[in-house]
Length: 287
Image 1: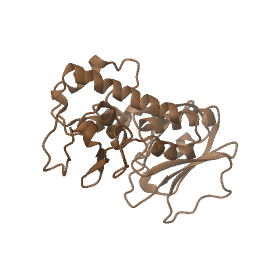
Image 2: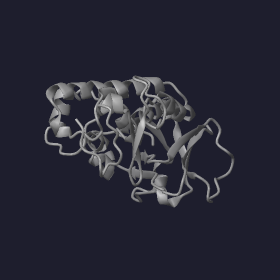
Image 3: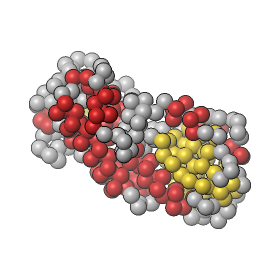
Image 4: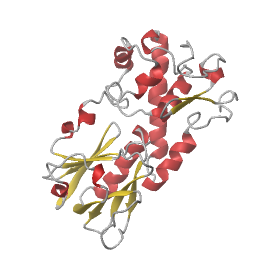
C-alpha cells in the first residue's frame, strides 16, 4: 500500500510532469473507482493542472479554474506514467487498468489496481474537504507545526495500542501498516504497548522515530520515477515484510503477528524484551 513517503514522491513527480499541462481526456475503465458524480469526471477536461498536493495518502490534482481530481490508491492501486499513451481508448475488461488521464502532449498516466478487492478511489470535487477521507484526516506528521508536544497531546488519552494508533488516519495522516512497523522498530517499542501509557521520555523517542523514519523514506524516494517507487520502498524497510530474516540492528529473527486482513512484523530483542507475540488475541500488552 502506498503510504506518506511514496505519495509524497508521486506528488513531486506529478508536479514536474503535470503542472502547466492541459488534461484533454479522462477515460474511466472501471466505473467502480468513481466515488463522486457532481461535478462529472469530464469536468477536469480542458483545464490545465495548476498544482499537485498531498493530503495524507490522497493525491490532489488541482486544475486551473476547474475542480480537483483526487485519488486514493488504497492497498493495491498504483500510478503508471507514460511519456506516450497508447493510441485509441482503453478497452474495458478484467485487467488492472482503472482510469487513464491524457495530456495535450500525448503523455499521461494510468491508474491500476491489482487483486479482487477494488478499493482504489477517484473523486472530482470543488473542494478537497468534500472528500470524507480528507475531511477526517489528522495532522500531517511532516508538517512544520507537528512538534513533540502535539504528538503527546494526541496520544495522552489514546487507549489503543501503538500500532493501531499510528495507523489511524484521523489521528495522524499518512502512516500505514508498513511504516508503523518501521517507526516502532526504530523507537524500540512493542506494537502492543498502550499509547496513553507512554512516559514523556518514550513520547520523545517515538516522535524522533516517527519524523526520522518518514523523512528518510521521503528522501530515498525523492527524484525517482513513479515506476521505481515500489522497489525503493521495499528495499528500505527493516522489519516490515521481512518475517524470518535477521533484524539489521541486533540479528534476531524478525517475527510476525497475523490478523484477518493484515500482519505486523517486529524484532523481539529490539522491541519486546525478547518475548514472542504469538497472536494479537492471546499476547499480553508488553512494555
